Amino acid sequence: MFIGEFQHSIDPKKRLAVPSKFRGELKSGVVITRGMDKCLFLYPVKVWKNLAEKLGTLPMGEANTRSFVRIMLAGAVDCEIDKQGRILIPDYLKEYASLSKNVVIAGLYNRLEIWDENKWEEYKKKAEKNTDEIAEQLGKLGVY
View: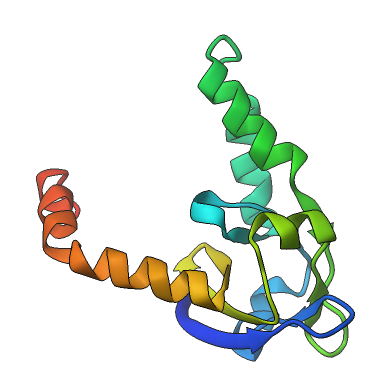
């Protein structure tokens, strides 16, 4: 399970160190793809395979569904973690998420999200203002 918020930096060779507490769960490789809200999603291979299967079975008749599946699957890349615990982020994903040198890696249960540090702070401030409203909506769904 991935939880927590970690500040890291991308080195000049576009490598990003994965938080050490997660490396054991990710040693068999990861998949990185475009995420929501202009961040990147990083999945363990096993979790990615399950998600990709579900995406691959969605009906192609709806334009929004096709678009979402294309963004998630076509934008995905397999990555291995090197001996120093780093991954290489391809340019197209780095540009998509507007990643600068400083990033935040956020643990979200079955995936990690990679955010530009400034964008993460903006997003977090906005979300924190709506916490009560969000909790109420989740309560209606029986989640919270």
